[in-house]
Length: 326
Image (cartoon, rainbow, N blue to C red; front, side, top):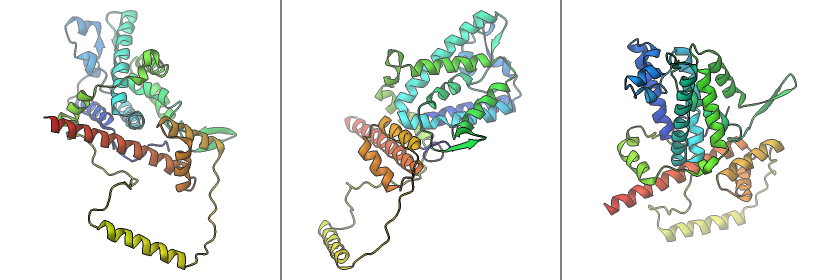
């Protein structure tokens, strides 16, 4: 299974918002029995000033099979948002969305005036596949008839199946998304460093994200060791620690030495790469790995939770400062 940290959309509000929008528009198409091509992007619609199709056409699926597979791929976007942060993820989405819209218009100019671009969020969903080439790291390996296969193959299989089943000419949209993802990965004009301004994030957090923010607790509990316990007096706490230390010195402990499970070098290298991308040094990453007895999956989940907690604390601090200024 691909590393994703906690289940659900914890600390991935933008992905959750996109997921809800696609779900709403797609279900509306099926419930009200609207022909998918009636909302598709075409020059004929633009000539009639139906500019809303530039937006709506990229937020619904035209068939139930595409709907199920597409939402599964969109759900995996939460991993990217947790790793790079909501501000960079929002900037990435806007850049990719604009690129795909321009490529769709160029495609319409090529195929003819009476044609249309297949509806669906294929472009910006498939742009996320480029992200999985590097991070998150591959943890599980297995061999099938001598061929090494990683845990990422399951996500790629869903993407390949979605590529083969569309009714309309959506393959160009998929190719456009891959091109947009490659452009973002090449870091042209330092795109990877772009972020949405802080005041926009604060505004959305108060007005929009408060209605869809996930409240689920993370799967791993993070302990803030710098925060004192409020219900225990400091002097009493120090005395208890001193007494416990004396008891430990008096009682000899003869426990068998635990043997750490082995870990293959390739998984270890991937783990150090993902920790370095989060800004942690090798010594810190090694300590986390030892605490989890060389369980790379749990160690990476801990790093993801720590990054999510830091982003959440920063957002809370910014909101508190803004409230004090007001």
